[in-house]
Length: 342
Image (tube, rainbow, N blue to C red; front, side, top):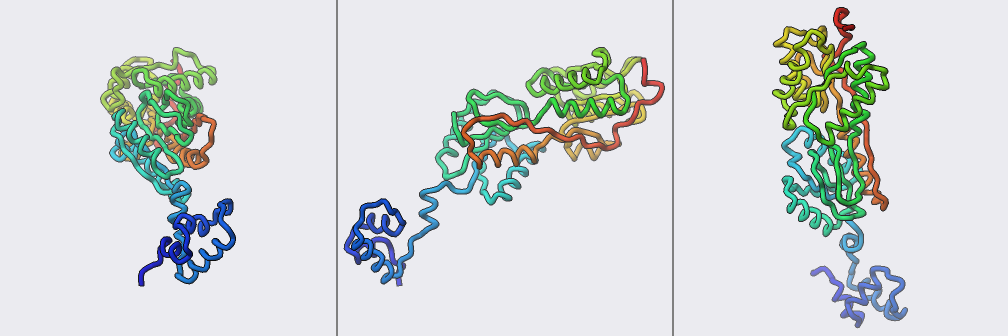
């Protein structure tokens, strides 16, 4: 026996299928006489017809899903994997499905992905990006920008970022609490992320009442945030009589270079030199000897916040900067007595 359809009910009741749909879907404002309503309900009961509520909901309300437009290849980068994991976990806890749309960093594919997401029955769209670049985004109430670095957009959208200044202050506070008076910074050529973090380091250093000359900066050229860049920067800062007693590195890869520089100069970590990294990339920090103290950006918290915001669909755009944590391991210590003063 075939399943009764809406047109079968319409034929038995002597009305149009659209009238059956109006009555059985509970549209009270529709102008249908009581007699017609009675005939439709009797016909539906006689045929055993039941409206497809699930299908009606899909037609009338957004699906509990979030589109994630990935600007970079998140699945191949340690930072990206952490971000994706955070997004999937946050959506899972909310009972929300994830529609992942990768773009490979191509502007035309970005626009296509955003347009595609806008045409889906989703609660909103999260534009996830790792590296800073100028991002042209449509003015969309349902769009949240989730960026692992400081970002700029050409239209006002809600944005979730790591708080680079507060994370930099964590490093300075830790070094000063240990008694370090001369600190070297191994960083990269100017970028929004590097500039914001350096400004945070300088501001925190000044708040500690320390002299500007005791905060020494080496900038690795051409955005070389690599082990080689860290080695070059660390050697430049350490190969001098009044060397710093601690190095703060732009990321964990540059901290690897600092470890090699210390080995070449016969310096022990942490007895002769304290080293702090940034990113908390476990394949790196746990493999170094000793394990690296580093700053852990708030990837999980950022993902959770982005999902919360996109589901709330607030109209007014805001920027949320979330703090990270200092993960203490074994690369930090008080400076040796003979190196505490000039």
